Image (cartoon, rainbow, N blue to C red; front, side, top):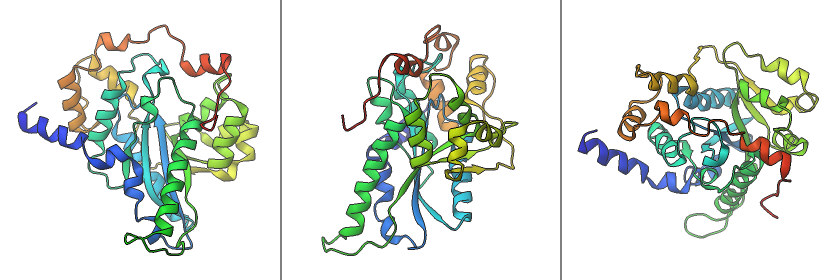
Length: 295
């Protein structure tokens, strides 16, 4: 990587909006909201190992769909990479996954990368991550709707914001994995917050919803987005190509490719990381009750 490219990369990774997260983008957005629309933030949790163009496309597809309903105004998006303790085979260190996500999203003016989940000492349940971000969003909303930049008080101009979990269709299948989800967490994620699910490949999210009593009960809070331009890119296939020395250009951003090359990521050795380990969610759910952020 050239010295100019390295300086550019460092500048991107130090950008203020990534340090402070989605709340920087949200500042001022709530006061500009049409009163009849609900401000909405999309949260995507996952490994992002590495982040791909398809990961980023999910945000664009979901925003277009939600705007088309006439009910919502998407005011922000958050990418929240999982912590190193997740235990998934081939998972590179969080500092690298965070850096690659920031590089990939440098051109986005509404999706940011948040490091909170990745910095937790243990794997964090999705519902706990959602509670954390929703608390920050509500605080920002209250500040932005009751106090202007000069410190004078004003009346709220928009409805309270909502937070929904953005995912691919394959995520719905995780609700059917025994021991992976606590029933009350599943109820909170789907019933209280809600899902925005983008179709992927030949998966049929409608069938998954139909076969789950919990998902079916909250089906009105599950927004299914059809992706007409098929894109089968997966991080697993990207890692496989990288291990074999074949091109991944146009599957992930050039800046991410350069970062991977610079740090020698996704090799045969790195794929053996966490080999033979059980996923932390399965271990934790089986042996330890989950505490909320208030406990």
